[in-house]
Length: 72
Image: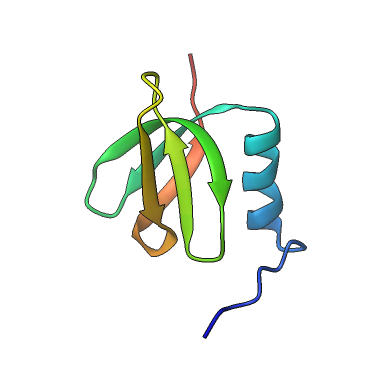
């Protein structure tokens, strides 16, 4: 069963803005791993992030501790 993608939620809006602005982010997982790069897309279950080598990683949202803009 597919879940509805509610684009009015603040978290969805925030990630959409990161995508539109191609803002580099730090994405920390519950495993303590940290991914850095730019968010390419999101859907109800996952986020895809591309690192500096354009390597794409798809991450289940339930595995994310936080996502924040990367400080230079």
